[in-house]
Length: 98
Image 1 (cartoon, rainbow, N blue to C red):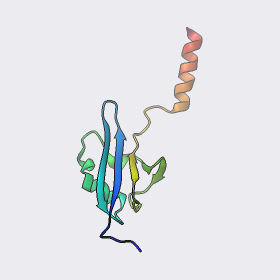
Image 2 (cartoon, helix red, strand yellow; image 1 turned 60 degrees about the vertical axis):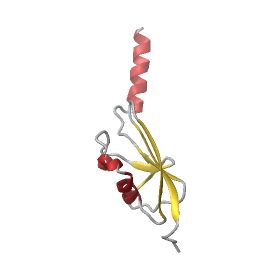
Image 3 (cartoon, rainbow, N blue to C red; image 1 turned 180 degrees about the vertical axis):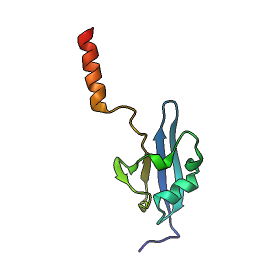
Image 4 (cartoon, rainbow, N blue to C red; image 1 turned 90 degrees about the horizontal axis):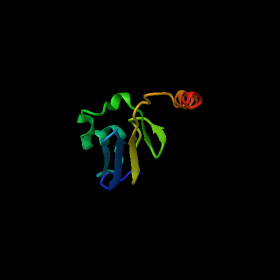
């Protein structure tokens, strides 16, 4: 049974080129990711489009309906600009040319 009066600690993190956002929040027990993001006001950030980005907790993809636990770290992932495999191939080709 969830004790909704109890507060839990969560963290919200994201990284952009020149911005590192790591923030700690106290929220009600039983809160979902979507509501936690609203409380954090990160949704209003002009550098971030939450609806287009994947989110996870400690590297595991989750949905916005996921119920948070104490000390969960919500990670907002940026879309890849280039496929890592393609990047490795480009680097190898570049080395062969030089």
